[in-house]
Amino acid sequence: SYQEATGPSAKKDNSKQKNDLPSKEQSKAKTEEEDKDVCPICMERINNKEILRKCNHAFCKSCIDQAMTYKQTCPVCNTVYGLMKGDQPEGTMSTRTVSSSLPGYPKCGTIEITYSMYGGIQTSNHPNPGKPYCATSRRAYLPDNKEGREILQLLRRAFNQKLIFTVGQSCTTGAKGVITWNDIHHKTSTEGYPEYFPH
Ligand SMILES: [Zn+2]
Ligand SMILES: [Zn+2]
Image (cartoon, rainbow, N blue to C red):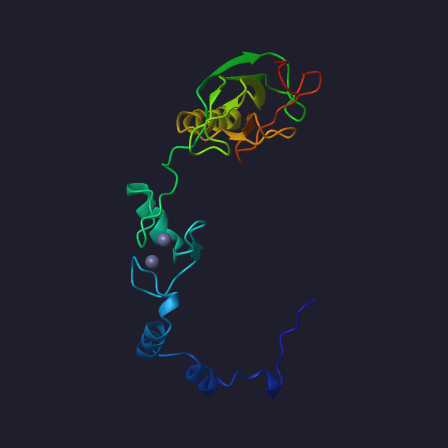
């Protein structure tokens, strides 16, 4: 068990500790010297640094979070975040609930999402503009609980912003594009379910 130290060595050197603490003026001067650590929003030294992933501009997390709720662009260079539309082909997203459970979620049913994506001609945002890409259908699954329904809201928003799919290079010839998942991760199989629709 812990015993309180009573010897002279336990005495704190209070005068030394006081000198180690910078005064308000000293810390302000230091902030102005270190330009790269100043938040462009509050003009103070960055607190809990957040670096934007595309342009690498840095802000206090609280400052940039607040700024992004008004406008989802970098306040320094106007790089667009979040609101930009993707290059997802036209298609539909539909959902239904089924009574069987996903592994790990035995107490609730399952939300089954079906994406039916139409074929078409690649645009300038795709790897081979002017070349066709094939239609495809995909299924994905979420647990039918609060968490799953929240994720479903996010997926619906992402689908409307054309962020769920993109057109990628065909693995075989490269002549025909294929519709592929963008970087949003889905659970695409449950035990006993096929991973993809036949198409
Ligand atoms: Zn700030
Ligand atoms: Zn920026």
